[in-house]
Length: 130
Image 1 (cartoon, rainbow, N blue to C red):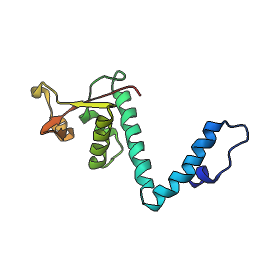
Image 2 (cartoon, rainbow, N blue to C red):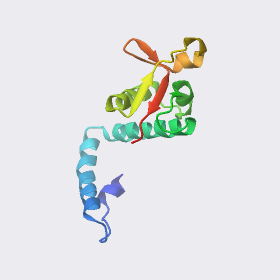
Image 3 (cartoon, one colour):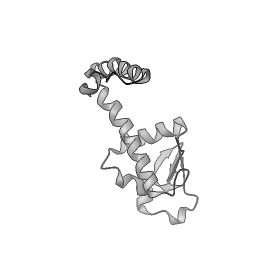
C-alpha cells in the first residue's frame, strides 16, 4: 500500500488519477493511525469475495443462492465478519437475504449457514448488479 501512496504518477495520466492518488495519500495514513487500514481493506475484500462466489454459484445477478453454498467457499473467513459484511450489503441495498419458504427442504447445513435478522433465519441471498 505504501508504494501506491508514495509513488509518482506518470506524466500522461489524467486529472482523475491525480485526484485519486491525492485522496489515497490522505486517507491511508488516517486509517493506519487509527488501526483501521487492515479492517477497511479486509471488509471490502470480503464483500468482493462474496460477490465472486455468489456469481460462480448462481445464474447471474438477482438469482437466489443458498448461504450454505456460499459460506464454505469464503476461505475460512470469520463468521462474524461475514455476517457483518452481509448486513452491510443488505443495508446498502446491494444484496437481499430471505428465508426459504419451504422449510421441509432445509438441511443441517442450511440451518448452520443461516443469518438471523429480525428474529428470522435467512437462508437465501440475491445480489444486485452494481
